[in-house]
Length: 515
Image 1 (spheres, rainbow, N blue to C red):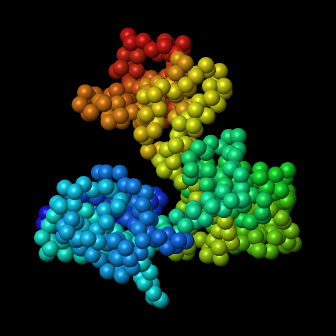
Image 2: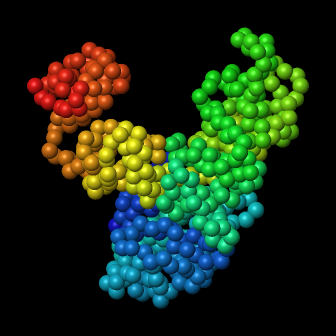
């Protein structure tokens, strides 16, 4: 299993690319283990991370053909424990020959133990003051000569140094989740989701528990997560659970207005302050007095507006645009962003002092692809909602359609799922949502078993025809409206209708008939 140097370098490049992608730390590190195994040829790769609370070593992430048992390692015991305690890598040429190799996680057979080598390296977070051992990275690999194993060990030590920062972040996340979970189980009943907030997964129940904890206070909350994950709904839940629930919840999307209008919207203006200011206007900080102000996409605020928001938080007063007298305000602030504010600070686009003011109680909402247990409950919730809205008698989602929904990666998160179900309800003329009611983007070649049935041109044509049929159904045969919905010209829609032999008149009744 001699690996050329260029393969090590190429794999390291792929690892760095993977760690730089958007996504959670756990997802990115899982991708790293998969890349290691597939590109270098390791049988399995796994990360063991130290739990700071009880100082045990937890098997945290694995890539393996066999399922790993949930085990803990003791520092100093076994190969992994020795590596953690000493901070030095260990190479085991043959597992069965090493009495310190305990084989406690994967249930390797006696035969495997005789034909596999093992390498374990420490993951060390090196700082100016000290070196902190966070855990260990281990791999199983086919039996190799000692000189080749030394080459793998050196490569893995480079990988370990590369991922130390990410492992430290994951260790912190794990400790925080454990702390919050223990705190919630000890002193709080299970948080019940708001009426329009579906939370079946463990991660979302944790998010709701955090919301329940912070709601009674006046602490500033920072909601973080990708677009479409439900930050606005969570802000509503926090407000509803607060002593200010009888007062208004005022919302502003900072990305929805030009920079020159945001300050007027937030702080108000005096008559004559600028062209078009014909009368005095209260800002949203004033309107939200004794209530809650939700600032979505706060990373889009200009630096001038950020300075004024900071003053409003610190001094509890604002000054209108064009005004001179300060106005006292008492508004509880909830902020949200999908942007990495830390990067914006480094670029000089976000004030560090404001960041620390709004980051009092951060809550991270995971993307939908990381909480797949929520997909079906959310889809059923939207199905019932839209069936009532559109007067449809749709009772359920078919099993193949559920599988499609579960397989999809949902880059648009809950918002995309909601739109998907609404579309399915609109086109469905049965009592069951089936796969062909779902958008074509969900119906991949793999999920629909069509890899070899169609040529590229035929597949594109089928996809194009399905989009056209959907638009014509929705517009009841109105080609002009269909063109608007598809964002193309009327001429193109007319050409495609003739190309595919569609009878537009028949769409008025929801039927499709070829000429």
